[in-house]
Image 1: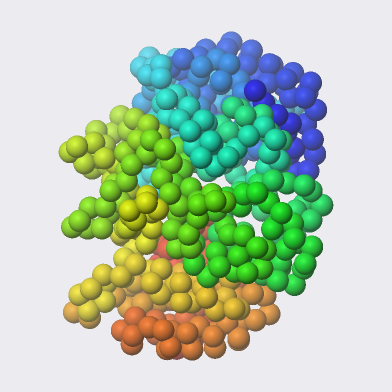
Image 2: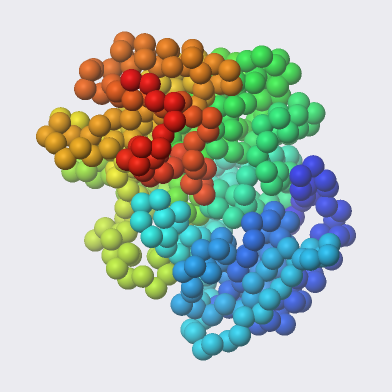
Amino acid sequence: MTGTLFIDGEEVPGPRLAEDAGALTRALSSAGAGPGHGVVLGRDDAYTAVLTALAAESLGSPVLCQGERWRRMGCTRRVAAVVAPGAGGGPTAVTAVADDGRPAFAETTHTLLYTSGSSGEPKAVELSRGAIDYHRHTVAAHAGVGPGDRMLVPMSLLNSYGWGVVQYWLAHGFALHVESRLSMDRVAGLLRGGAFTTLDGVGSMYAALLAAAREDRDLASALGGLRFRGCGGDVLPVSLVEGYVDVVGGPIHDGYGLSETVAWVTQSVPDDWRPGTVGPLVKGSSARIDPDTGEVHLRGPGLMDGYLDDPGANSDAFTGDGWLRTGDRGSLAGDGHLTIEGRIKESLVVHGETFPPRFVEDVMAACPAVREAAVVGVPTGKARGDRLVAFAVADPGHGGAALAQVRAALRDHLPVHLRPREIHLLDEFPRTRTDKPDRRALRSSVTAGETPGTAR
């Protein structure tokens, strides 16, 4: 049940979509794709991703997203073909992969996603058809997804978020508008001119749109007219959510999930949201907090089967009683609303105490001229712990104001030992594949002495 499809503003006619998907299905079948025999998405191209999803659905073939990771890491199971955009105007090109005797995937395997590797080597996440079906139906019902939606999605379709949206589209047949490149001016223009019901994106996109909406009533009205403003990728500052309530009349609907959970296990929705949380748990999913470490553990039908052929990583990923260790610190309210404080590995250690980066970042992000903030701890090897270094992206032309506001906010709202002594203003953050600020790259730039715009 597919709906209409738009790629970069151009509608793909239904007959053409059916013809191209049918041709790809036949080519993949000839190459040996089917249950247990995987198909690799070799390039990050929106139309190729949608066609491959349609063809693989017909054949029952697992899809390996993020083909560059597959090429670098290899695969221990049978891969039948690699799909890429076609040359000379053709929609796709199929390269068959010779059968080298590797065992097939489990017949229940639907998708392979690769972790970002931001906290170690990337791993192949094996997701079953049952996990995908839970996402398509139970998670979609929680978010209110239906055939009447008109969804604007300015992001890659090959990460867990984007691939999750494709699964929604396959199941519910709404109008899907994909923008293959994130341009704030273009997204704002589309919102002003189109009767979209939902927008999906990451925090940096929403921060930029909010800054524009403060000066543009038409954009603010368009954002306010959306039924759903979905967000994922990283922890949202409370001030950003509250800014949306003030300017557009409704919040960002934040959610939480991992590659290991298809996408979401919690989701804020229009009638159940709270600033500072990532929303209530989706029906069927459970969370608990490790009392010793504060780590969030998850359980439910949307979880991965495991990391493909990596028993050591699987042993580390799951507790003895079968809960997934997320690596994130958080808290859980009695009504199921989950708060995520950040990655445990990114915790700031100061005077023997541990603090989540958002403790400082939220103070910075609340400054009117600051669009985005990140704080990293640089180990000193001394008893006082990490040296805290702050980074901020300011609204264009407001760098001086942003710096003064951040200094004042840190002084007014944080104790001395939690005030970063260095503040770097950047035009933009280096980012991971899932569009989070790349904290490892930021920390490395400090240790290498390459960061620009330092203020002390």
